[in-house]
Length: 165
Image (tube, rainbow, N blue to C red; front, top):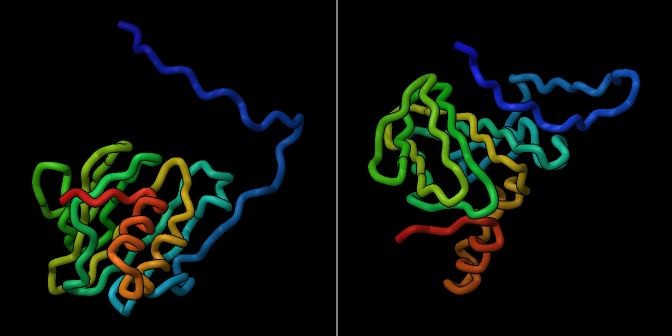
């Protein structure tokens, strides 16, 4: 029985010789953004660095640090990989506990949410594909309290975040 293997995508690197272009980010680097002392965002590989391919972020959430409720994205998929702790993950139908090495994939349009309700810190990797300017979104939380309801709704829509009530 032969296994049918999907084709590789078209070549994107077409030069005759390879180049030195890899880069390393050490795990010991401090967080790029700290949101209210509850969530630390590590911008591992953002949209600019990957030429729009994806965005990869390590997110460290304080004990009982919360997180977003059910929502969806129209322009990108999102994936979660639990590095440590316990994270409540919403898969569109129920909240489940995600623990170390658990993975949740959400295609565009898929309802999802996540939060830390535990008495211990949790850490996750979040992958957005294609890449999007999520740094703007993460750092924008600080100004949400200053916006009117209509401005807040528009801000979420501009950042491809559609809340499910």
